[in-house]
Length: 207
Ligand code: PRP
Ligand code: URA
Image (cartoon, rainbow, N blue to C red; front, side):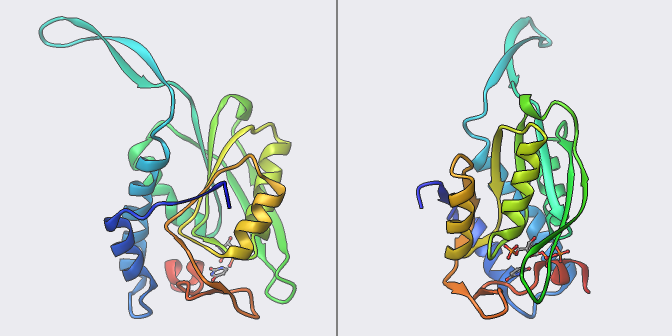
């Protein structure tokens, strides 16, 4: 799985374990997802380019450096929105696109129902966020849409991935790195990740 990157920082793993716990309530689950996403974003932005700017300190003028690429963040509705705050806390200038996809519970096939993306995707560093990569259908479809609209430089950020999802995603989008906090064992017959954390959307929103 050459394009899979597992971020196993101790603070990320500790928060993920609390999120997996079935007794963790929605309020805590949301807060942990927020914090965990921020830590992950810190890691995946390490190689982003910088550009030089002139800044006047209280003492003199110097050349400083700031982020040199526009960032577009694309949460996959609905659970992906739970990761928005964590990214925007660190990259407040990011533009946000939305792709609405749900997984048909019987066929497990992705169903697209909404898409609104900012312009100039071709120049942007794009981060697609969704807590779960299960069969991979939703992430594959979202990435296909973003590429169709001109996106080129894409990262996919999730919390928990399955081997099946990573294989499916890498097969269609070998150019896109996948970042996760954990690669779990397998999918069950209903397409849920084992051991996983359950239905991310339901746990986030209390549905
Ligand atoms: C969940 C999750 C992913 C998708 C992963 O969303 O947030 O988008 O399932 O499954 P896949 O890899 O097999 O496609 P869900 O379809 O439950 O929709 P929701 O976010 O609206 O709850
Ligand atoms: N979607 C989820 O929210 N959880 C899973 O385990 C699989 C798909």
